[in-house]
Figure 1 (cartoon, helix red, strand yellow):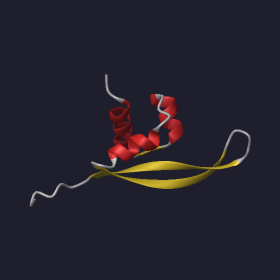
Figure 2: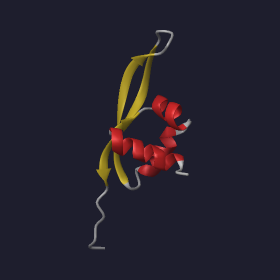
Figure 3: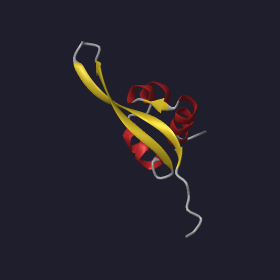
Figure 4: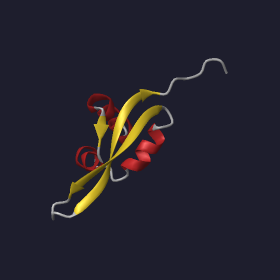
Length: 77
């Protein structure tokens, strides 16, 4: 069975972006930021801060993570 990190990575590659709500709904992940932190060691992932409304009409900000590709490895080392 794939780990949550592997599932989030597959989601990012297929959809190019993920939000904390999507991670919770699809993968039961309440620590998307921690998963993204680990994935950034190998992949380029950008953060977009999105303004929105919660279900009560209150203003909220949340992160939307965008997949940009793998980090190129320097073979000259």
